[in-house]
Image (cartoon, rainbow, N blue to C red; front, top):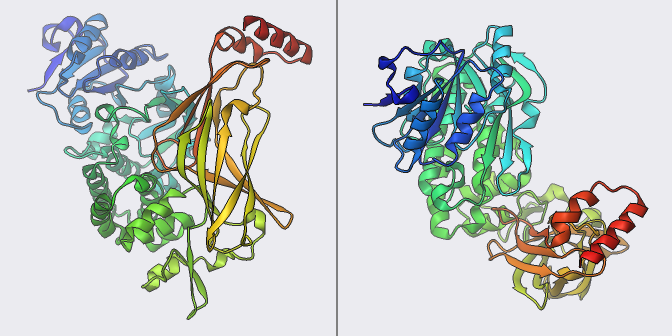
Amino acid sequence: MNTVTGPAGRTPTTAPPPPAPDVTVTVIVYNDAERLPRAVASVLRQTHANVEVVISDDHSTDATEDVARELAAHDPRVVYLRLPENSGGCSAPRNRALEIARAPYLMFLDSDDELPERAVEILLAAHRERDLDFAMGAVHRIRVDGGRRTTWMPHLVAERRTLDGIEADPRLLFEHLSTSKMYTRRFLDRHGLRFPEGIHYEDQLFSAQAYCLAKTFTVVPEPVYRWYIAPYAAAGAASISNQRDKLTNVRDRVRVQRLIDAFLAESGHESLREDKDFKFLKHDFRMYAGDLPYRDDAWLASFADLVNPYLDTLAEGAYARLPRAERVVLRLLRDRRLSDVRTAARGLGHAVAPRRVTPDEADGRLYWGAEVPATPEARRELDLSDLELDTRPFFTALLRHEITDIARGPGASVDLTVRTYDPALRLPVGPRRAVLHLSPGRRRLTVPFRLSPVGPGLFEGRVRLDLGAARLPVQGFEGVRHPVLRLRHEGHTHTGVLLAPPAFPPLTARVPYRAGTTPHRVTVSPEGHTPGRLQLTWHPTGPTSTLIRPALRRLATPRSRRAARLVSNILH
């Protein structure tokens, strides 16, 4: 039996309920006592105050129950619902809350997120202007490790518009969050629309059904949800989307896609299948693709077992809409060339070459990798002939620079071993002068070194990057930079990214104070969670970083900058 508690810890049957609310916001929670008050407070401070908050607790085992009961005791708009046992997902808490929600309009909020103050007002106004099934708005994603704010799928919410069905803009299938929307209860009840229980990625099926069943809905550009992202959360606290290393996670995602496909067929929306398949390839599969270089052969084999049968059912037109590099990864996976999958996925998003290409004398075509593909499908998708690798202008040449080893050097330096792959043999045989280029702040740091040939189309060199040699602004530099490698050939310059090793422990060095500068802490690491570029993160330290730097940002004149430099020198 569910436990429902209202104001002051009383059940709703022992006291008259408060006036009927306009909107019920369900806040689902599990073992999140610390952040729950922030989420509930964001609802209670809405500019449209006639709201009901249902805290739906998935049988937490920490202090969440005490916190939730305290919140209910202090505001008559808050109701606490505790599930009798843990469901292991988001669906059951939301569905149980729908059973007791009293308002004609419904929203959903996760306990680690917030609603902007005008979210309810904005979405409710859209409903009151037109007879809608739901209204939706922009979602702000906020990184908890730095506060960086971006808009989720900004091109889909850039302007206000009302659509008479999802067919008017199938791209909206990419915006599959249930939390960015305000639904009418009439709409959900008429179609029996509830969240699927016992499976993760429930939002995707629920939202696909809502899009297809809605006759009319409105999109507004104003922010209506704050989604906090913790990319480096510990394994036990990671969100479902950040548990992609678990094969059960893969299984759930594929299962949800099959449920969506069945719904599209049964509801007469088969015409959306290619758009939905493209969304799966471009968003869902792409999230896993960036992680593939981390995975061993056993994991990749199991991943292929789970994913390939579903990939075989997708519309050919969906594959054709993908960038070439993503099609290559998919084909290599479907052909179970697992080592090649890692290599191809490592360069996703960076316009780099494969390590090798193979010509086929029989058809004169050039193919990705060290072998000629065996099937017509693979030959079509791995054919690189149209890229003209051997004749395109050198500044657009497709080379590949990989760091094969990284170690701490003396002081604030790091030693890098760099391997350059030139599969089209654009570079003459012999040592090549390369330049490592970095631009923290306004001034450049260039470090020349030598790349020596070690095989056909393969060069290798070692370079020491002294982070203390970077000339930084007097107020310091806080930010992220990615070094690039530059090569010159026949009067032209080629600039390429440096691919970091798939995994190495971050190296942190302290750059000491020098005349006219502030000290810094610099961390060398792989880029984010995906094995992409080498990343350097600068963070000012010392007195100027806390006392002087904020003021220096506002200084505009050369005289004031000189004065600030003098103050900085005095502090040191």
